[in-house]
Image 1 (tube, rainbow, N blue to C red):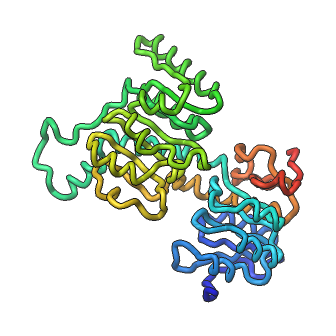
Image 2 (tube, one colour):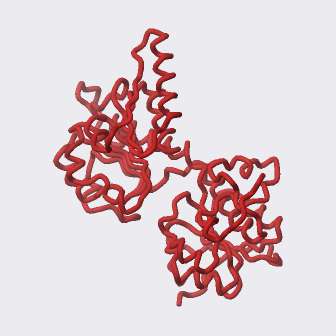
Image 3 (tube, rainbow, N blue to C red):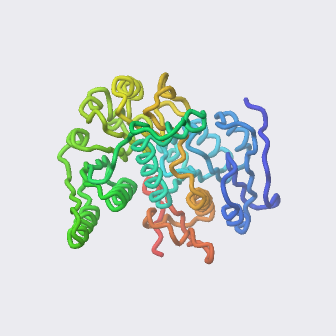
Length: 386
């Protein structure tokens, strides 16, 4: 067993014990729990990723709910320990929950929360930032300047890709994928090709309307196309951003064969899930195609990169920061806390987890509901009528 972990305590005499495995941004989430008679314990252990034994030590003999992180392995062992301690609620401070065995949680009667609806624009913005950084070779140029190598302007110095008039490809046109597409179409007048199992009518109408606006002002209109296959996007787009879910069908979605379909000077962006790309194949493709560029926020074996990736000048890599805006991270903390609080208090599940504005309004009390419980149906939880 792990040794007892260090904690910071708020409202020591609170009726309900809620544990957070990490310190989270902002204080509103703490205040909301304390106001509802919760004793809040925040792990302050100087350890990036807590082990299962560490978390069991945190749960202890009595615990009503836990707020955890996507780096933790929430499976049978932890949900059994939480259930034995009287806990009925767990929430990831994340929209994804690939680290959570939802079936195990349901088996022990534990509600599993996540935090959708607050990451859309922030994640899309980072995908756009990586697109620009890769296209204009910003990281390479920054390193060049800092190394004192700049001796004056040269015609061929860090020549990159112009995005205007090129084609942006989006694989997975859900909320984040569509937000990214709108940014690239309106911001850089790029044409759009997208692939999704479902038609994105709103996105299509947006691009059509913007194209008509450009035409009315004497400019070349932008266009859109819904591809019949993902391969069609890879073959035709100059810039491709990945926004699928991660499951058995999307593991290594971009592999050696599909990388070879792409244009030699294409740009590939991934802010979704690391295993969507075969990272070993990607490294080999980057080596063989120096004008091919990639921007990555997620990795196949996080927190590690596959050998050789860190050495590639045509790769921009950042440490899973797509949601790292102040507003979003504080909102995620608030939603995770309210998921746990709501289950403790017996509140129903919110009807639409993607419309969370009422929970984030600091000038009014949050609704008496759990913002997002992924196994609400399996647990037969009532749905809020608010």
